Image (tube, rainbow, N blue to C red; front, side):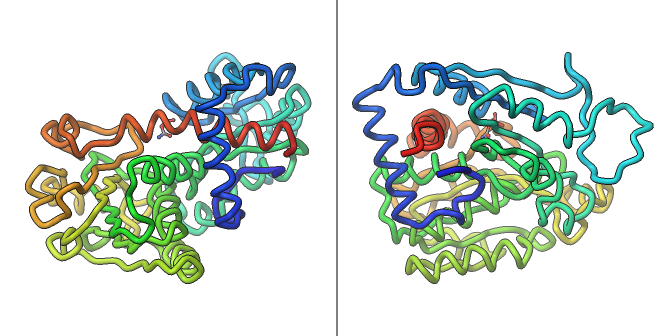
Length: 333
Ligand code: CP
């Protein structure tokens, strides 16, 4: 494996191999496996889990890491191709990213969606511009419309908990004070479809996932035996659900229009997951969320602190699956 950018680049068997390796490294640690290896990470956006779990994972495998947050103690980096650089950015990623790659054995990049132009974001324009100048193993630490590390961790979490491969998986939009990117909704829908699940995307009008994201998930479902559909009917969606995955995202009808998005979401504050959402779900229906989550706006205390919540296990599994990814990338086997 040379790059870990998208679960869609892997066959199901290759995902299974990564999950098996993650379990093996959990049971039989290899503290010298990556001795002498360096992971570089560039974070254009904040992080708690991704940053800490990759650093911890490299340390547990005997390697080391460095972290760059452009503009915070380092030069601000320009990502737009063809930009006239008369603003704040002192350096372009076309120079800065290959320089950083030359100092390490693998590079990770986090670059969220611009949130202005849906086509620009769906094309992963900024991330791809950087990926094009990296000649080392590369990891997507979350891009405009993808978060493969989160998706892999969530797949393992469901396996750990014995959630059947063909279970009903509901990804539900939940409230947030502002528009958030489509990376996790897109990656999660695709992951659950690839896992073979009955995937239902539950969202209010104005928040439908873009056709490209749905088509990619449906293509994965066609290979796995799963299915993917969308609805705004909460009661029908949650009937018999075995997983409720809560996530916030911006209006796709008003993408890049903060005022129109804000007006639409102002009427949707009841999209906060409470215990009564599970009234018709499976008895053991789990609550998943990638974190960070805002309590009592997106998910109520009663759910996050209750037995359905598996958010801590998801976050822990970021460490276990990323160690497997690093092992594969850096040991070359
Ligand atoms: N879920 C996730 O990627 O968390 P961070 O943004 O804290 O890295």
